[in-house]
Image 1 (cartoon, rainbow, N blue to C red):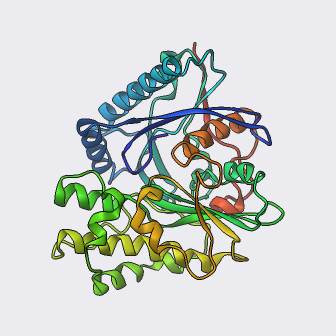
Image 2 (image 1 turned 90 degrees about the vertical axis):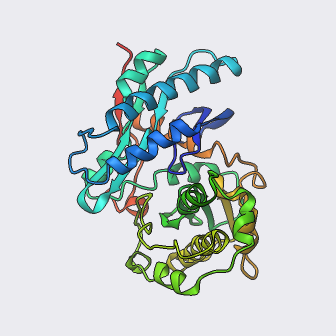
Image 3 (image 1 turned 180 degrees about the vertical axis):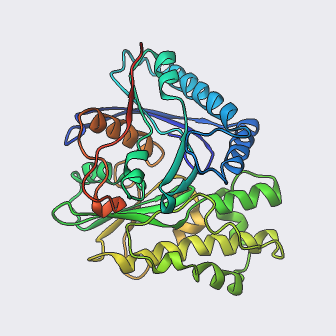
Length: 355
């Protein structure tokens, strides 16, 4: 899994039947260096005007080749370090460079056949495309894995909140009902702000935001976006909301404003739940922003990190992609009307063999 935060490649080992059997193995993150991250940023910029999902203008072709090689190297290093034997299947997310379900377009860079040849293992890839082509949002895709994990929890309803580059939530009802959608920004806007203003990839622990003051006018503009009035399921591109200029703000005030935007957009998501969750499970890199976590809970609400609930918040999305790959291979649905607005439960993904 290589997410919109552009922090690195997460690799996880899972034994699963794509249904109830979930045995989680080791996991590892392979961080991107500055050169890798910059190439991906350039690819995202070059993808902004794409209309043909097979086109690779600008640096997109180079980025796809390099990204595929990085994933092959990561899986090979992971297998060596954790003494992992033969693999049955690899789930390959690739790198999202544009996500526009409103025009039935989503592009995840990554050459599945090339990765299969490099690893000598079948690869399932391009898992979002079929849902988007059918009129779905193509995101989030992790909810069906969240439901499998929730089998070990007694609290219902429960909400899994994943704070990656974009934040998304999965609401799971008493009988396994699913509702999922992107809540708003996660780490991406704040990461980009820190990269641009202080030369750091992210705001460690939320320390910069903690020193700033929220610009209420800018926040009001951000929260005034029509997206928050749209009924879920719904999804966002990484650069949604990036157009509002905040350059007049100090480093700390800009960070504080973006952190508050993330926080409030998450809390607004509660308005769409059929019933309020008994607990929230927080996953993704955003759970390490201590300032955000401190500000999230309201009166009587229970927010747990993935680790406090017995899971691995760093590995969960990579585990999910393994789980989804198995479901794809078995022809089981990976998206649903309540998670992506798909017209009916849909399978998806392409299979690349090693030959």
